[in-house]
Picture 1: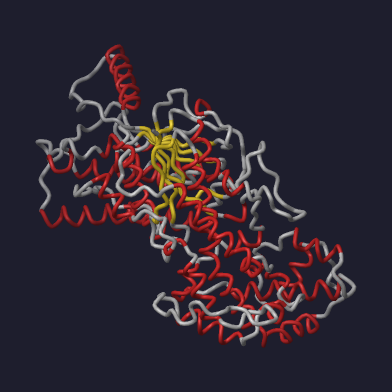
Picture 2: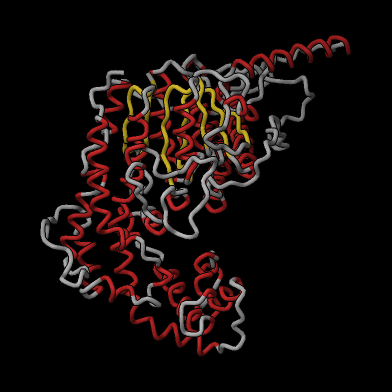
Length: 599
């Protein structure tokens, strides 16, 4: 491997040391639980300036051009934060873009592809929402680059969800993709998307249908209108899936059904199939531009999106024996074509660090293993599987949901159990040797979208405010005025998304206490509303403190990702590894990929 930019292991270790020294001082801000904000008077404990000062300072430095306060002290004598400009400057200096360890995406693409122009015949915006479209286009190109570099045709997509990345790698780049997800719901959703793609392909078939002697050519304007109507209808139906799944799609890394289920390979759409006999079909004859050697749309559609055409129906009566012979021949040809085609195969399987590749397919070949926004430990396990399986030649992993990571040295009484001794964090021997830990609240803070917040998207402030005030009510009415077991228990039990189902704070409180097993019937509506009114003037404190946590998010995320990069660089069988920003962080906050190639 001879990429011009290969970050040395010693440099990665030095940056990890820089981050851990920094976070030893500042991570206390990230580890504050929003639930305790008013019950423990967090603002007055940590901050010595008005909340308006914090808010204005954070947003005025969003572009990174203001360096006021750099090198100045952040804390006053009582160890409260009193210099927000200095705080913003030092957090920015310790974020990934300023640590000098990331490999630029443009440089990597130039190394792999050169000046070759990518030919796209399938636009992702047709089949998925804007965020997913951006992610899939960029990541699929990088994966295809490494597949070509390693002379590989097979990809294993871990935590594939509804198959956005998998299906696009198959269709656009002709790769044989196995999409693995622990959720049966996601696998079913992947098949549903393929059914929609089948309809989209049928429109192409109609457009390239040859004229018969009895048919009349369409007027150019009439043909254009028909094409627009057909494509508009199908594209809308296919495109709606992305928006529907954006609302209902569960995280791909969550452990759900662990039973492997078969994947349906056929579907019937009464609106599409012609009313002719089953033997009737149309030979596809298109222009070289559409159906030439470079455009293999039919070949690349997933299993249940492909309907293989047979020869043009002959206009003569066939006896039963001849019909049966042709049917058998057609089935054999179809089976052979499916076997030889590049397909996307969704599979339901729970993946751990010890998962064997033959559990995925018996026909395993040299492969690239990938994961787009794999949750918690699944991202770590993807890297471990890559290291231990000789068939896997390259990896491209974009993780998310850091709060779901199992942490080896976490001090919390409620720390997660790891799976078979393989902890999600830390991974590298270097960081493990120092027994360093973040804590769940800090890892939760690492998920905060810094660029989105500072560029005007804001935080879900009112829902956070509701939860913090609710904790005051729980403490004063169910904890006898002190931190009791009942109050502590509310941190273990999750209130969930009750806020979105509540029209007022009173309704929110009733639903939340009921879910937590508490009886709020003796509390009047006016009493509950009184708590809301009492703390409403202090809402800006909550907003400002969360902005301080948001500023720390890139630093904590950077440590988690550098630990994964360090893990790859510690392995003897890895020739090259890098940390690359793939996505626009405003569109996709979890935008960094850990990439590795074996010797």
